[in-house]
Length: 81
Picture (tube, helix red, strand yellow):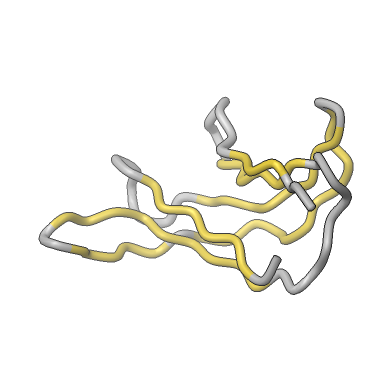
C-alpha cells in the first residue's frame, strides 16, 4: 500500500485524523499519527481532505482505519493479498 486518503463530508476545517491498524476487531498499532485535514474544493463542493504516505505491507485480512478525533465511526479497508 502506497498511500491512505480520507475525504470528509460536512466537517469543519482542521479536523484531526490518523491511520491505525486493526486485526480481529482489536487495535494493533498506530500506522501514521494525527494530522489536521485541509479544505479542498472539487466541482464546486468543499470537503476536508488528508493523505498519508505509507509504503508498507500489512497482514492479510487486517484492516487499516482512519480514526477521527471526537467521532465514533472509523472508515476502514480490509487488506487482501
